[in-house]
Every structure is written in C-alpha cells, then in structure tokens.
Length: 603
Image (cartoon, rainbow, N blue to C red; front, side, top):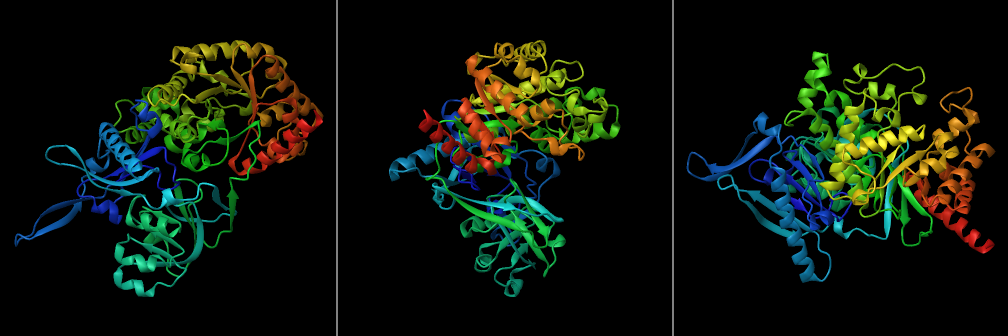
C-alpha cells in the first residue's frame, strides 16, 4: 500500500510505502508486519532520489494464488523463507519509482478536485515480468481530514511494568479491562470500553472494534485492518506486538499508550495520563524565533505541526543509542573488536550491508533526515555526538574503545574526540551521515553544531576535519554553529565568532561550570540556579558578544521555560532564538510575546 501522507500524524510532505511478499491481502488484514519506507516529497520534486527512512518488517507469510485439487481457484498462505524475511521486499529504486507514481496520482486528483487530495493507493510488482503496477487509488479519508488549526496532546504521567510493545497507531492513551479474543465466535463476550486483544482483526470484527477503548494485535503494520479502523475510530492501537495474546490476560486492567513516539506500549494497570487541546490559531508569533529541542525521529512529524521556527537542538545521541546501539568505532573498525560474542552481534545486526560502517551511516542519516524533513525548509541545528565516555562504553562494543574516567563530564567528550585517534574513524562516520542528509537527501536546512569546544585551536581542528570529510563551512549554504557552554566560549567569544556562524547557549553545562556546581550531586545541587547573578551576566555577555560580531545567537536549555524572567531578559538583550522542549513551547511563545510587547512599549 502507499499513502501520500503519514498515516499517524497527517504530515503531508512524505510518501509512505508498505510492502510484503505475495498478494496484498495479508497487509490489509494485518496478517503480516510489512516493510515500511518514507520518501520526502518536496526534495523528491527537486530531483533528489533517496529513501528518507525504512523499517524492516517480519513479513511472516506469503499469499499465493492457485487452484485446489478440483481445479477451483483459491488463495493460500505459506511461511515466507527466512532469507526473504531478513531483507527488504523491494529495492530502493522500486520505492522511488512508486513514489513518483504516487505523487503523480495525488497531483492529478488534487487538480481535478481543486484542493489537495492525499491518496490511498494499492500497488503490486509482477512476479514474472518484474514491472510495478498501480492497481487501485482512492482519496485518503482519515488523517487528511484532521483539523489543522488545533492539536490534541496526550502525555503519560506515571509508569508501570510494560506487558507488550509494538507499532503505535494514533497518538492517544486509553485504559480499560483487557479482553483476549481468539476467534470470531468469541466476539460475543466483548464488552464496550474494554481493550480488544487479538492475533489480528478482519472486517467482521468492526462492530465490536467500534466499542473498544483500545486495540492490541500480535500481527500487523501501520496499514493493516486494525490500524485503519483504529484511526477512523480515533482510538489508540498497538499492532505487531508478536505476543500480546499470551502476555495480556482477560480481566486485567491495562493502559495502552501511543503517545510516546513510534513504539506503542501496553502497561500493566491503570497509568495516569493527561490530555490537552491546543488552539494553534490564537497563539502569538513573536519576532524572536521560538524553536524546539528534539532527539527522537519518531516524534518529528507530530512536533513539526507546532508553531515553531525550527529545531534549535537536534540530539543525535538518541538515534545512536536506540536505532544503532553499537559503538561507532566498533562499526568503523570491526577488526579491532576482540570479543567473539560482540563480533557476532555486529555481524547479525549489519547483515545485508556491504560494510558494518554502512549500517551506521544509513541509520544515522535516516534518523537525522527524518527530523530535517519534518521541519523542512525551517532550520534544523544538529549537534554532533556528545556522549560522555561512560555513556559510549554502554553501547555494544564500547567498553573496548573507551577510557575509564573519574569525571566524564569534564573528560573526553565533544570536540576533543572528533580529531583524536581514539575516535577519528567514528567521527568520519558521523560526517558521512550528515553529508548524506544534505547532499543525497537534499535537506540543506540542516545546520551542524559542535559541542563542548574548549579552545579556538580545538575548534579549528574540528572544522578542518569536517572539511576533509566533505562538510565544508559555507559550501552549499552549510552553516556551522558552536555550543556556548564553557566560560571560555563567552570570554573568548570574539575569537570563536571568526570560526563559527552562530552560537547556541547550553544553559545546563554553562551554569554548572560558571558556578562550579554538579546538579547531580545531592549535596550541592540546590546551588544550581540559572538565575544566579553570575550566570545572568554570562548570558548577557554571550548574547552581546555574538551580536557584536554579527553572529546568530540562541539558547537551547530549559531555563527560559522554567523561569519567565530569564526569557524576558534574553529578549531584552536581543537574543535571536530560544529553543525548548516541545511541551514547553506554547508557554514560552506567550512569555516571549509579552516580553516583546513590554520592550516595544518601553522604547
């Protein structure tokens, strides 16, 4: 199946392709977990040809068409071969060809109807001639009909044991009594308001599904029957869990959460959650850019709906930890991994790739690219990796490449790593991934930010290393920013301004290093306060220094969200941007707008 938008958020700048082996009925019925692909429409239209993001599905079954012993036509399922399941069912070129077809179909019907017309399309690849065919196209009628002037937000406010996980459908949360349904004849036992738990669902189940608080299935992807019906009904669904029918017990209270990104979770018991509706039309639009901090690509499409100026801080550590999980050096130089067990893990995870390093480049570029695509053409400032040594050591194979430090916060982190022999090969992979986002995906709204730069000489070495790896400052509009988070960055801001295009104040580390306070220490953490006079002076000097040198200056900590007086002071000093967590965005927009009005009145 193909949708010319994201089925979960309604984000319209992507084409979403799913596929499996055999006839397509298994995808519709949720009998298999299909492969999934995203392609970014705006850059595709500009001539770029790259898959934005992909997910390998289990593709458990292959449905074929034939005849029974009496010659009567029939379909039948048989297990897909493991080799087939372990690889994507179509090549990138097929995905891109289908994307071109889908965009043409959407354009055609949009022109005919006089309005944008997102489409729901079915496709097939002939097993004999290898040709791609479009077999059906109809308007998409769920995600495309959502209101664009307001957004509803759900957030979990507690925690508990997780009984099952799968693909999140919708962005809601619901609690109820679980009811495991094994077959059609069991549907009579289902009570309205319960959580429907099943292997999969079919159209015969829809009357019961309409009364469910949530839906959980063992099988299925985001375009299966259960997912489609759940979206139409506006109830959360977690599909493709694999084992929900054995892990969840009829009569037990559960909470189904689809508000935590791409992964849906079924919690044991009733977990508290909050719901809020935000009217986007009435929100202020201040001159000072208010941006968001983001690290999880799964949240990018939803977050991009908010009225923000872009991403002021995109952290790649989350992608490395969650989507890659292996130390960059173990992938860059796998021959140096001594452990047979770890070598086996790396071989398994990177199967199908020409080199282990290609796995890292693809995963990181697709994660970063998803965030950049979601906000395109708004700027997205991506911070180079800023794990500390103890955090890097926690990755697969990491312990062999990382030194043991008594105080990792002040140790081998940030800029000091990138041109050091102990990490230079890993940094080359980071650069290759970011270069792919800009050059192959066409997402030139991506800016790069260097963290924890102690001295100008260190900055110059990093910039030179980036240039060697194809990321030349100024080329193709590339801007390179620096985190302003060490007192030396403020004291020597005129010198740093010659090397970078902009500054982003990291208020957490800058406060700790200005006041000499470890906020993780129970003994002295009470002294951590961004409002301290010394810290306020640091903020003022940083803004003034950047403005003096004609450089962009922003802040990417939560201080402006936690303390409105800091936001007001920053606006008064002329800061260009304030970047906060998505949950803080609305409040900061209002605070900044008030500060700007007061400033204008005073003038």
